[in-house]
Length: 91
Image 1 (cartoon, rainbow, N blue to C red):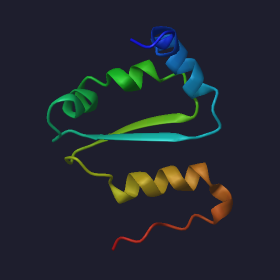
Image 2 (image 1 turned 90 degrees about the vertical axis):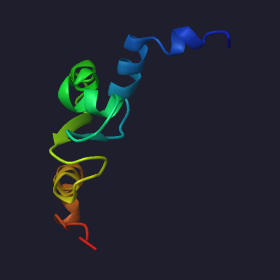
Image 3 (image 1 turned 90 degrees about the horizontal axis):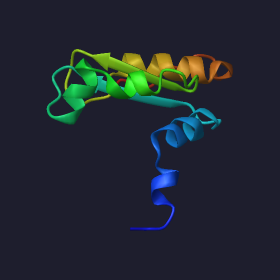
């Protein structure tokens, strides 16, 4: 075990570090996922854990293991409003 790893990976330390960053985060989970990702989509443990972080958004959708274009476009439009709201290509 690496010295100090438990202190750096403490749950509250992770939340505090995430909230203090300028980076905006998007997590998406599909209801048709399996395993851990399905738990994230239905029980939403990470969403609850990170709910106080203004720079973190957790979204669920009815699909599987994918990044729905509408959710990504919405996130990008709000994260970068000066970009003129350009939507990503559907190709």
